[in-house]
Length: 123
Length: 290
Image 1 (cartoon, rainbow over the protein chains, first blue to last red):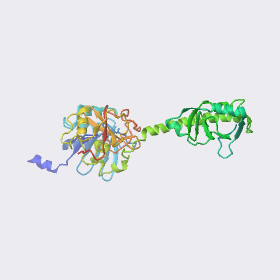
Image 2: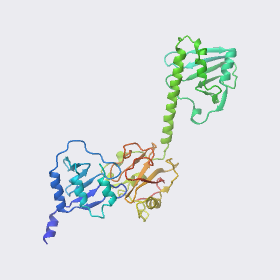
Image 3: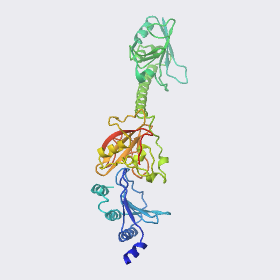
């Protein structure tokens, strides 16, 4: 089938929220199309040269997107940071669109209303 | 009867000495008559400091007045051989530095009694602050069985991502993100104090709700807090008396969400982990977690 052929070639995109302490953090598979949208969004963001926002030790600490190649985007506090083996780049996302779009890809069972609420609090 | 009173105040210069005899000596001994016995920390005697350190009184000839041949008076207290008592006159320094006091006899200038009075006040303040600090230290530094705070050991790629707050609090590395009750075959079933607490007890932690932040004689203290319905978190009390924690896969740290040291997890800024459940004791080698 064409679909499975396409799936075989696709990258495995993993999304997650950094939020828990005792339980493992929620992670989920991010559909290819959503991952592409997120990459497009990232590509259009302005560079950030300021200090990175510091997340609290306990509670919501951001949402991440990872690919199988070891790249990771982390959205928190209006900044998206891409880490690869070689570079760390930060870009401005004052409306936190990247983070919100990414969290929206989570299956409903993965993120409880309390976690969603925590992610929406002022950062 | 004669007395030699040395004002122990200088460091480089020789301390001034006053000699008194007869009725004056009797009055001094009367004012320094031992009263109640000192107890606890105050009985240990003063710490040597720079500045005024007390009056050293020597009885010339036979000792009398229930006092040894040589003793020290400092701010109301007497110290010497078999002597750690409050003096009858707790303001003896005021007496000797008064307008007609004994200090006037010293050839240290007109202003010396004033200098002395100020120095007594300063040293009293310094000693009170020192005692307060010591008290604070004693309150927070009596955790001989508490684990060391060693973030450098935990915060490395082969350990940090795979050990959570429960691993860190129990000081038990499993590399499995340990869950309360799992090793005992019965994990918690709800994210509340009761369920997670009972699960930890099944792992052989000892529930000690009345620990009141005091270190146990054996083992070390941990504390369970809950983000209601969402997650649990643990803190541990270290050897230095302060608490530290490891939020999930993040680094071990010794500050709360306000970046403050944690003398008591009940009052720490714990973010959404609003429910303080209980203290528990981890007996080293007794627990099993997975």
